[in-house]
Amino acid sequence: MRQLVCLKPGKFEYIEVAIPEPSAGESLLKVRKIGICGTDIHAFSGNQPFFSYPRILGHEVAAEYIKGDAKGFSVGDKVTVIPYFTKGEDIASRMGKPNCSSDMRVLGVHIDGAMAEYVVVPSSSVRKLEGLDFDDLVLVEPLSIGAHGLQRGQLTAGEDVLVIGAGPIGLGIIALASKAGARVIALDMDKKRLAMAASLGAEAVVNALDEDVHQQIADLTGGDMVPLVFDASGSRVAINNAFSFMAHGGRYVLVGLQKQEITFSHPEFHKREGTLMSSRNALSSDFDYVMQRLSSGDIKSAQFITNRVPFGEAASLFLDPSRPLLSGIKTVIEFDNV
Image: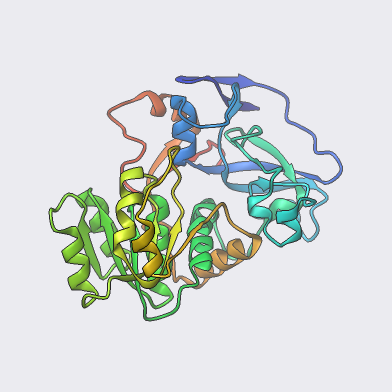
């Protein structure tokens, strides 16, 4: 089989290896589609923290079940993978939060991922839902990131929600929050992404390059500002600025990630009795929720997959400046055998 290995920043190579054999507690999957994530782009460029090379990237998986000991699965089943692996013994796991386990190993980040024709994963990580196709399944992981953020924020129907950053994760939050009955405001500096946000359910969009952003948000909320704010930009400037958009009694959820410290006025945050929280990865229940939303048609994969590339062209795609990986919403690698 072929696997695509990131040997070092800026260098990919296709390597032929034997198809791996699953051990006890593992399953072998035939990869059908892989979504390209910002993590993959950062790893290729050398900007991903806590990363080592060589590494096979890829954690947004749609695959066909081949063999193993996953209960309830048969050869040929269409599946996806919860790509966050943990022993389940640390304090976070004991509290029901394995998504932020201290011994977390993420597929394609800490261990080799699924940019390969076959991949072996823990049997406990495999998920399926009858009726979902490979396009649906490749979106389950990134949409689950947004679903987990919404769970962290305790969204209630009818409230105003501000989503900062209309990239793939932010757009997923927008779509899911809108379907849950929120009135969503999207904030980004890219007009095309703001248009996508509107098409996915945002009732209002604000360009971050405008001089009167704060006033626009105040006007949209009747002066109350926003009770639930999400950052999906991963921009330090955007994260710091967003504290001023919070309503009194509001919640602020950091879904995006950046490397530096964040700063805000303690008195302004304190007088709001604000709640600041992070949202990392997703839980099995978030995966189940997203698969149900895809199955019901509330969320449609065609709205998100905007670029497709054959596996044999994936390496050159990362190097081609004329084909930006972050254009559109989601770029998906498709294998020759699909």
